[in-house]
Length: 125
Image (cartoon, rainbow, N blue to C red; front, side, top):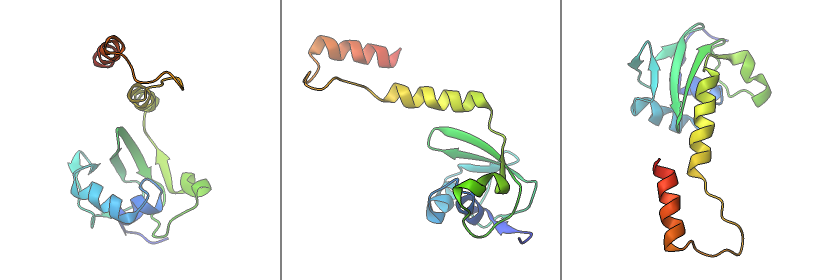
């Protein structure tokens, strides 16, 4: 395990992003921060660095435990990073995810105008 690794490569290797290209785009878009500052994809990271990452609607905070260059298996992710994300953030993310999904029973057809107004009211409040 080497000392410094590019942050986009590490985010991919630690399984925070599915591809290295997506990790690089997240860095470019300002969704990856260190010390409250957006970082470029080429930024070198070291053991002990704390990284704030926005993945979809989830704001994760992770600490680098090992600087790896190659993608690790899902079981070994805990050897690479320490998840510092508060549990409230995961709960908020689950609520946002649940609010976006609607369930309509099979065979009920499209909602009526009255039902649609009620759905819109529930979503906006």
